[in-house]
Length: 224
Image 1: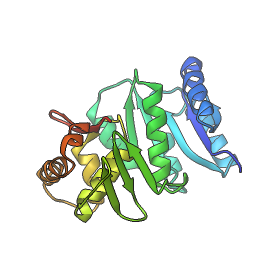
Image 2: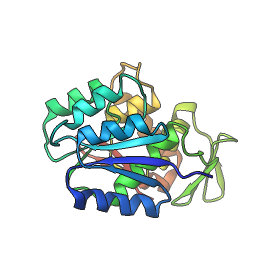
Image 3: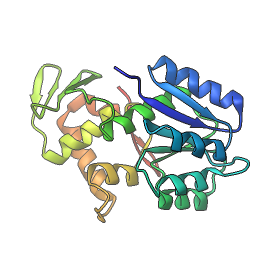
């Protein structure tokens, strides 16, 4: 089976090596580009790239321009690296089609976890039918949750929410991101919907509800 290709675009060679080493260890094939112009050349040459990790600040062609051009012909998932906490850049990035933002400095393990999660969502990585973490067994095929050997009855949305949490373990998830992925992008409801569902979910899974941590002012994180 051919390895999944990831294109890493950053003008800092040390950063590219750091990201590459962790992704290669995870089994990915990594292509590198030192600036936006080189990234676009590689992208148009190689039609098998499954995901791009792009730094926002680069010489010649910046990250946002790369994403804008790529989006004219491809829906390949893009994670953007940024050292700036500039909300305007992030909003512009989402307009152009950026899938995730990760701020420098970041944990390479978290980056790999996000790469895995995005590729599962886009069906590039095979999704496991069963996920086990922290004493919870979630069987997607059977639509069933077992906690400490006991079957738990969840509503459809509670099941989807727990699945999303367990597929993104140890990753901080904003309420907006949860809405977009569990309630879909066309949902324009109140973020309090999430809080209500989380409360019910915690109650139903008992002591294991402590795995769902609240990140005040942002959202939630599943830590088994």
